[in-house]
Image (cartoon, rainbow over the protein chains, first blue to last red):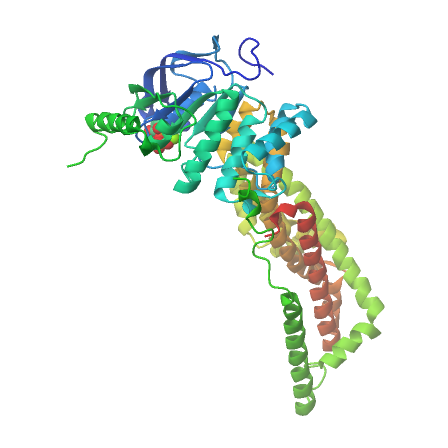
Length: 269
Length: 266
Ligand SMILES: Nc1ncnc2c1ncn2[C@@H]1O[C@H](COP(=O)(O)OP(=O)(O)OP(=O)(O)O)[C@@H](O)[C@H]1O
Ligand SMILES: [Mg+2]
């Protein structure tokens, strides 16, 4: 089931190389320039966050990388192979859990197995392992309406990982959760990532989340978005719940605020 | 972290134990009081049975004329079942086709809207001319009555899936067929059932009117004939029989819903 690229060990991430990516929705007078042009390079196994104002093209970037939208200009290579169809070896998580209400938690995850026609028992074992790591043990046979918001999002993370993709794309995955749940789930995601080292492209509005999770934070400008700053986060892992303990954290956060102020995204008096 | 999963109650929103007894006692009690008052009033005021029959009259008539009434009820039930089944079997696939094919929607929707708002019973006399007095005309009217609610609700059901979910299924490499099977059909079930629940009520309404005008059997026919003989008691018995048929069909719908949508028991 490899649509893109060469053989790779199951537990490493894919690389992303985007050159001059630009996206214009529609044509003629209704055309809307949504993104770029931007260059986007992500190393295998790297955790990269995209942060930027609303409407700057973050979600669009993600869909382009997933091969779910076509670039208007520029090209994207995954593991050195140009994208031409929806990327198969990928897991996607959106802000809404997008679970199927008519399937139990475990069967929502096993949808990957059923649609991709993978080995049932193997996938079930992996799903059980993921449930355990995500604190979902005992919730397997509940329907989504019987789960809390945080648990639903955990199930949707399990669904994105159970087929062992080489890349995880997350679009504000914790945006709808409360602060306490968000901090915990951020840590749980980091632990999962440390174990498997998938390549992660993580979209967020939260500076704390970006700094708390990433190897590198890409700051985007107002739409049509460009990448205006790149911050390497050199903090030890796993990172603590309270990031303020690190003096460096304040500096990283300050840098994002300053960039936003310079771009006129923040207009404080 | 591991305790989070067990913290949520297993059956949220479940009524307190014993509450169902009261939900049974109250309706039964109110029916008894209602019929009792009726009986007493008619006896005291000495109203003749051809004008307003006593509950004891038409209830006992249900047992004395059981075979006749049950026979008509059976005919009516068959008509409902056929008309409804055909309605659902055509409406659901058609809804799927309309939602999937743009041009079909543009071409068919005005017709559907027109047919939907048109009172279906007015075509009864036309059907009598075309198909004669008999079960066919009634089945077609029942079909028309329940077809549209099922069609319209199924259409919203097939549209109800969050388009971003298709991003996920496309990345899974799902085929059209798989998307239907795993996502669209089950996701639309809730809507289809909502349509069918309205549809069955309409079907029962339709079948009686159809039998008034276009039938030589069935409860509607029986009531109409009783009316021409001024047999008011039998008319009331027919009313009870009709209500019972309606109850049975509603019960079947609820049972089917529980069976097919175990996830929706909220
Ligand atoms: N399918 C589409 N058709 C037309 N315009 C679109 C489409 N998708 C997005 N856009 C536009 O492209 C721009 C970027 O959208 P995008 O969703 O990528 O922003 P975003 O950075 O994810 O914003 P937010 O933080 O609010 O989610 C917006 O102006 C949006 O209106
Ligand atoms: Mg977005």
